[in-house]
Image (tube, rainbow, N blue to C red; front, side):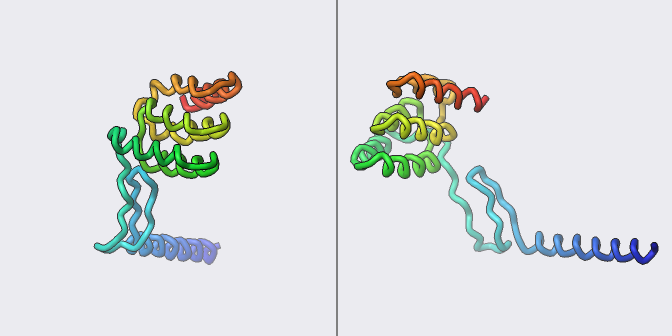
Length: 148
């Protein structure tokens, strides 16, 4: 029985020592955009900071034009998903971007993706006006109720 406890203690000592050595060689950083695991040195890669306020009208108009010039909803979905991950928008701006989609399913997917980047979430319910069908509005409300 003593051999068992000795080998268990021996194994745990090496496991904790290995973990401590790994932590001494790496760093963990979480700045709101994700977690970075990498070597600890002075030249480590820093994740970019996300913007915390909605963009200017000029910047938004450039993005809106790019969305309007996309030929297909699939192109708009890719662009919209990227924009929602990089910038913060007001509900008015999100409404304008959602209106560029041809199909309600694309609008709904965009609104779900853009929720995390909205600066005035208390007004998000107003975005139901971009839908023609009540089923899409109901899907948006169900999504919003799940976020509470």
